Image 1 (cartoon, rainbow, N blue to C red):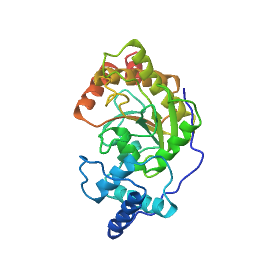
Image 2 (image 1 turned 45 degrees about the horizontal axis):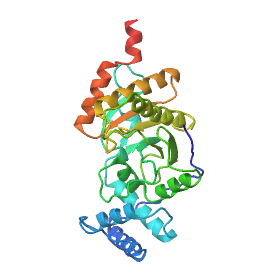
Image 3 (image 1 turned 45 degrees about the vertical axis):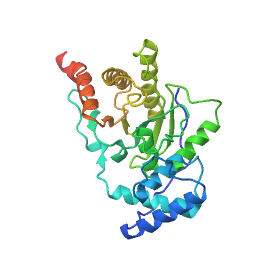
Image 4 (image 1 turned 30 degrees about the horizontal axis):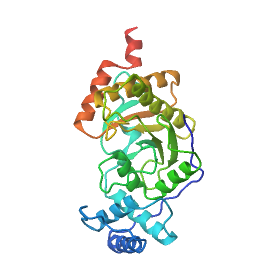
Length: 289
């Protein structure tokens, strides 16, 4: 099931200057304190930026006042200038493929038309402060407009987001212009079943279908859907991801300029490398034929 599309555009403001950041962050912290938000006991408060991230993680969906929203956007845009960003189109293509890349790095620093977020069924991001999931990282870098948009999508439907679906929002302060949110299967307490494999494949297909329906998405980057807290074993998930994507690309040749499998750890990279070695790509098959 593929549904949802951004209904508005958004223009990023100029980044805050370094000298402005402390005052802007403190004003945001003061506002969030006025909203009643506090760093929970036992959570390391850290510096002001970490406290800001913690409070925004805990904050319910909703717009900040206009001035505070602009201040936060300028801070997040400043943080972008402090990080190295990678252009999706500059990534090397895997041998035997025409558009597929494997890239180890932080997906929140990838300049792509769209990236995929491994969401939970509430679709509102992670509310656990400093949690190391991709959902948390994407919502922090994008800013709270992302949670607001997801909340609006959920309000328009009954119940939780189904497994194997995809939704599209703007990326706001991310380098990626758009974010596709998909809910993969949860396999923490069992080995993946045939249903789990089908659900994971459905997530990849839904993202590809939804991205393909947007003419201006030419570069698309996948995270490792379901391989984090959802517990899907990395090697098996990589094989499903590659087989599903390869079959989709074969049915839609030339639709994307680049489809990226993003991995963060060396363990993830090894799983995808093994899957790629076992599935060397359609162009190599054509050469042998």
